[in-house]
Length: 401
Ligand code: PMP
Image 1: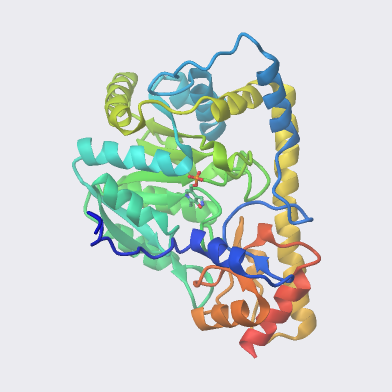
Image 2: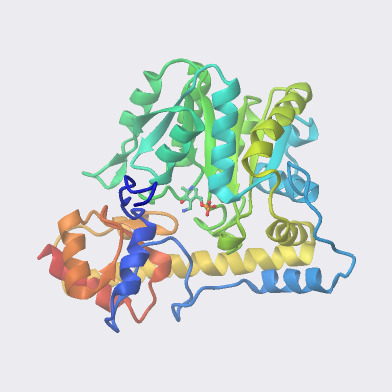
């Protein structure tokens, strides 16, 4: 008899559980399009050359020690991360009204930001889009916020429900927090246009809502780090306040290093200083201080002009391969005469395609074709290659006919 006898088995995580099921499948044709991790054309994980180079330099530097970082992490990493998302000439940075703290990748940054808001912000309600990354509601609920939703995706058009989004934000209580995907919305791949972002910005500022950006794919959407940061930058340019959670998992391929940052843009330097002092009180009892290795890699790459340039080239290579997979899949469905309009495959942005396949069709594709994906019909385009596109197209064709 165990003191834990009453503990019931929890269900697998809806996203990570896809990989668990995939690993159990013995079929040679099995295909994992579940988790959002980049794969090469050969289906292999990728470590960027520039990351290998930075690691080598770190290893060779015998003056480096393994002491604890400060609670807020590596200073150079924080400085460079703010420049990366807000722009190197950002007035908000020059005015010292941004506080940036190193956190445990995107998830940890969201969690620290959420806890800070739950402790210190008056309107403890956060609005998240429908649908959104499955971890968002859990992270913010456990941080102590109350989670509500706004309309975002329209299944009929497989595009943005812009009207619905504006209506829901308009009826949110003044001061409410709004979670926005900075680019490459997960799972839909549907982003507002710049003009739509501008309208969203005006409404958010008019209503006094507080924007909290989740930037997990900067550079991965368009291949350009600056273009993918435009949404965030128009909000910072108006002088208002906002939060940003950054992740280097995808754009530097540092998934398991858990490296990311939380920035809070404040009205002035005095507020930013006080906010940072409180962020330390959130972090200290949670994990004391963040890990040093990944942050050192990022800081080196962002600081060194040559390494930075090499990174942008490798990043564009990843983004371009994903875009090419979109075109190949679209063409393959056209060639098969698969019924329906599949143009959303090439219109959607970033790592994922929200296919529009329902959970029965997904179950059919897993059973008959050994293709693994989340039950909402999301496929990770980075898990595809020229050799596996025909297999996926056959499966989709069979699922819808
Ligand atoms: N936000 C979104 C929208 C994501 O898709 C992800 C990664 N799947 C994250 C945050 C956080 O990922 P990580 O903690 O690995 O940086």
